Length: 113
Length: 111
Figure (spheres, rainbow over the protein chains, first blue to last red):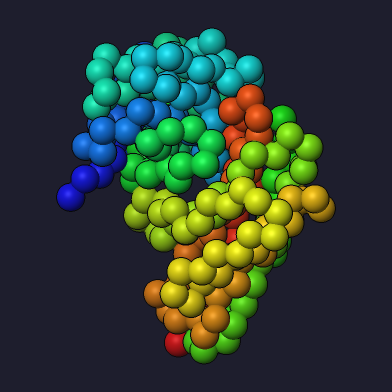
């Protein structure tokens, strides 16, 4: 089945140690999104790609970077994770922006020790 | 940052009951309203995307309405079943590609 895959499902990293989360899709969608969801809070959009065009939300910390080497893959890099970066990270895709529904992966739960 | 609010935060209903929740959002520069269902240990799944004032959409026992002028959407579930137990998230999109989720309504359907 076509889907959005996130690896790993659970990631533990140390304070300050760079970590990369990955997302892949078999839907051939143009748009890929990264969301951060902290406990009991709403998912928060960090950034998204429309094809190769990168769109950073204004309040996304510089500590968070993203790469999209091709249509299928998108990576979230956290350069120096802090304890406050512990969260669920969700990847999603959509055919276009705005009116198109998003297809989500299962998420990666990041723990920072 | 815009506030998208959902109420109630959680809800317990008996199997067979009908229920509804609310999503409130700022209406200025509104573009689209999304509803998602998120079951535990699964991926969020799209239910509806609505754009026009007065829109009504239906999928099986679930339906939704949209009022863009006053900034709210209702999600209705008719004859709730245990498999409807999930968190229901709404998200509002604005011109300029701003996209904001609410914190969700957690529904538990008791058999």
